[in-house]
Image (cartoon, rainbow, N blue to C red; front, side, top):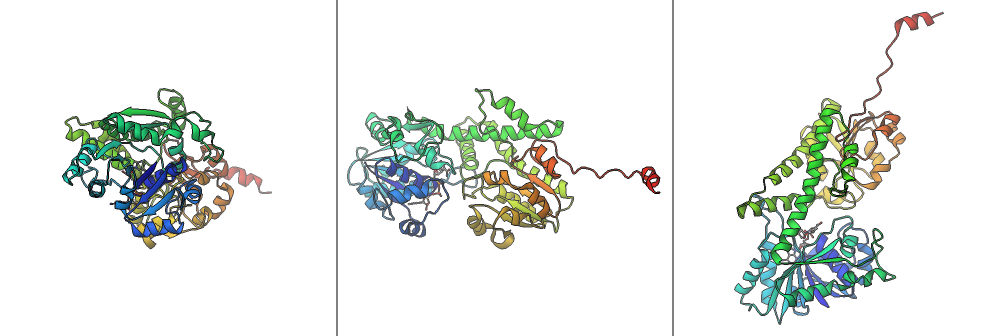
Amino acid sequence: MQIAVVGSGYVGLVAAACFAEIGHEVICVDNDQRKLEALQRGEIPIHELYLPELLQKHRGNRLRFSSCLREAVQCSSVIFIAVGTPPLKNGDADLSYVEGVAREIAQSLNGYKVVVEKSTVPVYTSEWIRRVMRLASCSGNDFDVVSNPEFLREGTAVTDFLYPDRIVIGADNERTCELVKSLYLPLVNGAYYSHPDRIPEPTKITTGAKMIVTSAKSAELIKHASNAFLAMKISFMNAVANLCESVEADVEEVKAGIGSDRRIGSQFLNAGIGYGGSCFPKDVAAFRSVAQEAGCPILLLDDIIKINADQKKRFVHKVREALWTLRGKRLGVLGLAFKGGTDDIRESPALEIIQQLLNQDSSICAYDPAAQRRAHEVLGNSISYASDPYEVAEGADALLILTDWEDFASLDLGRLKKLLRYPIIIDGRNLYSCEAMKEYGFQYVSIGRPNVELSAPAVFDREAALSAIP
Ligand code: NAD
């Protein structure tokens, strides 16, 4: 099928490449001329596993890039809207990009089209899209609007798209629903999973993806409620971690205990410095606004947001407690991205913590395997940047771990200890065991676990020393 994807960001670009991978002809549209030219030159604007392979395979064949929305609409039967829905100051989602695209689609129609919301949007958005398109003089027979929320996670976006837990289609009529379902057929009937050239599955899942068909409003709510629920798991575990610190329990032990209950599940129970990224913070805030406007406020969401904000302040407090004063201290920071596996720094807890530490006059040298360029655009030269974790540690008063990159969990601790000015590691992601840190002689501060203190120097035994004198 010929489809258009409007917006070539983390979601649009991945969706476009994956739709091409499962056999569709795709035009990916963006109004950011620089991004578009980079894509047309064969550059890859985001760090995402398997995306380079997919773009290499399909660019110029089944996947084209264009700035012309009109042309893309006219030669496609299904148009996905995958533009940003950033937060407004009051927490509502800013839907002006979605509205602008809907109006442009309406003005470009040359026959029946299905418009699909891929962006994360509040309930009732599909009705608003319909209304905007009618106002732009489209007849209701010329188009339908479907909600098809995206659940991919940055870092594993390609495999999340191709091997999804479920595909949700929110359609208010049968014909449209069937059309959108057919787009995903190779994933639903499992044909893609027996393809010799397929992107390798993350686990041994080779059966078809589960398809859930709902009303458009339910689909819109499914996405917001899913993200709010995941954010809740993280905030819940952070609150438990804080309690663990007060009573000297170990949050990792508590996590293993509760996460092995299948009703709870072990994922998203990692205590740390809080969630970030372009989705959870804005989606929890938008969901809170939606519920409030509907007259059913969900007060739990207020606590999720508050715990998350406090978690970053608590971490800065830990740094201060470990180092006494921060003014003039040189801190090595591992991680700038909001999580491992991505170059995305939007709402990154690492950046917020860095800003708080800079405000207290410490100096920072940071390293991130993928997010350094983007971080530089925001932080400029207020910090310095290193080319590997060991350069970060060189001469630092303490090493701070702020992003859960896999590589950061297997560093040469002996080498780090020699490079650091003081053997202090403050780990916001619990990447190391307290035992290992004790063995290497670090002072180790983590989240929800007892601190590992430097072993106290042996008490000077004056009598023994005197008696040893010949
Ligand atoms: P993004 O900022 O990376 O990409 C949005 C793209 O849309 C940009 O390239 C921008 O230039 C383009 N754009 C904006 N207005 C346009 C217009 N009028 N015409 C053409 N292009 C236009 O955003 P993203 O992270 O890809 O998120 C997109 C949506 O998907 C959001 O609603 C987000 O909440 C949702 N989502 C994101 C993720 C994620 O992990 N990033 C996961 C699931 C859902």
